[in-house]
Image (cartoon, rainbow, N blue to C red; front, side, top):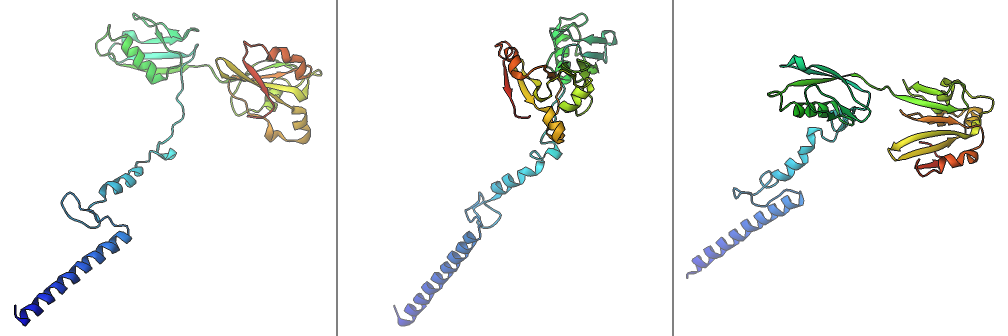
Length: 261
């Protein structure tokens, strides 16, 4: 090989090395910037070609599934209880329209169909149950369900109050207000040992003790517990220790706590 050929060959190798260095430097810079330089399915590299799955996963939160204002959370639906009154309206068979009351055992008697269990169901679940019940009697039964009457929220006041009884719970009511609604304390009431009984489930009832005398004296009504539907406010004549036998019966499944709800 002549001297000129050697020079030309050396220049070509140097040019190729320089081009390779430029490519390596560019890829290193892209990697430092967080750009995916892996080949895509089309064999190309660079930004926007190999990171589409990651981008889609991040943008998937835009559907509002985690935002309560956009429907991420829902209030619990009403569930039927005994004594509730429901109306059934059949679109194509109005002769089957009915006004029904849920029985104490939770069942409801349907016209020309077998009884169905309704307690604990939402209106939509009950509607589907009715559709299944009439599937053998009607072709493609179409029925609408409406809640006509239901048991309104209530609390019960007992013991040493002026007017023991059951009272409708129409708005936010605390334990002090509940006593006043029930006629206030009697002269024999134990103001410092007022009990609030609350159903946790079918087998457990909580019993909390409140010193209303101290609350009223120190004007700390903000600490008075708010009532929930079904609560029982009991004002004893003596200290809680005197009525302990009522709390220790295993059948009640109660426990006493001085903390607030």
